[in-house]
Length: 231
Ligand SMILES: [Zn+2]
Image (cartoon, rainbow, N blue to C red):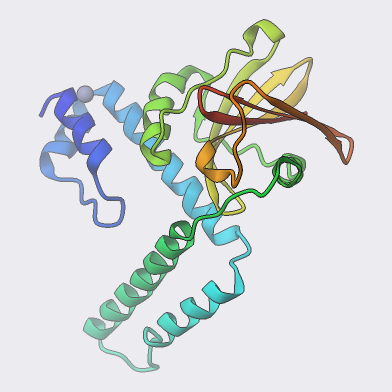
């Protein structure tokens, strides 16, 4: 297996069934750059799963999960074989919940709503990162895979922002890229999503500026992507 084959495998693999085959394991052992890409992908997937568990799950959905889990409850005395079955059912139930969660489209009604959510997330000050600034090229490949759009990083260097790194996160029900920047010893959050997450038309190049809870928010649209910056 060469790097091209490996990257094809990485971009098309299914997280839930993705068993690394022997060729993949062999390539990972010998190739540093593919290993780097692979680790970023694992990190991003971990982010999204943690975010999913942490997110207040909507009532209807948690009811559905309960129903599914009811069938998966582990009886007191079970054989090893049955236990494996139960663990599998629980995993399956979470997978179904996970898929239902992202399949229900969520759209922001207005930019006020989006800026409030962005500020709440910014104020959590959770700076867990699955890649740093040096890995941005590989991270972009993986972000594009996870978010299913061509994520473009805006040029903020000339405004004095230094990229620190980032991860994936869930803002409401939107899976988005979350980047951290530093300017004059202050951390700035930048959220990137595609415009499918807006319930209205926002013109390319337009801006929405707001002050909430002592934070400044700046939302703009560029090349079809929505950027929400909070500092
Ligand atoms: Zn390689």
